[in-house]
Length: 141
Image 1 (cartoon, rainbow, N blue to C red):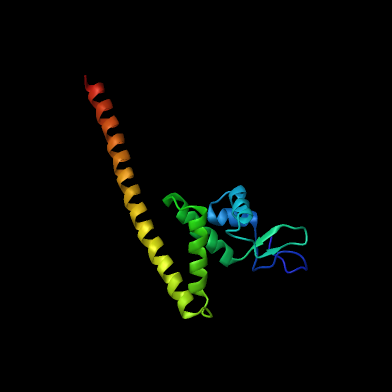
Image 2: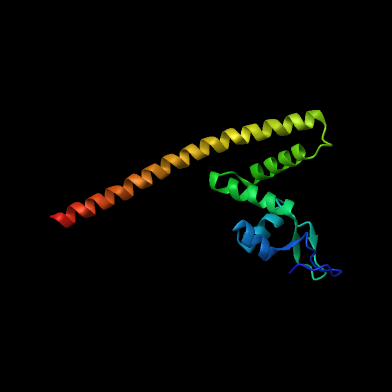
């Protein structure tokens, strides 16, 4: 619920259920990411409920995209920090250079992981086609 009442969510904040719907992550997973420090809610309601901003949702979407590629929580944290440095114009040149290198490194790793997943998907599709062909051949006998 979006309200502008004191102590209640504002239009700029989303409750955890709304964030779960937007990110297709479970509430339990979002809470876990808060507990391990990957995405901390930007605010809390008067009742103590987690409240998230669009920036928080974007961080969760980065994590959701990294997870199927096998990145660890440590790697997720490192990349999120690098992306935050690059988004912040106040960062120093050396800090921005390091962040850029981290992003390039993870891009290469993600590309390799995507290639591996494509091969696995090809094998899975070959297998399902084999099963259909065998089933069809058996039905003709």
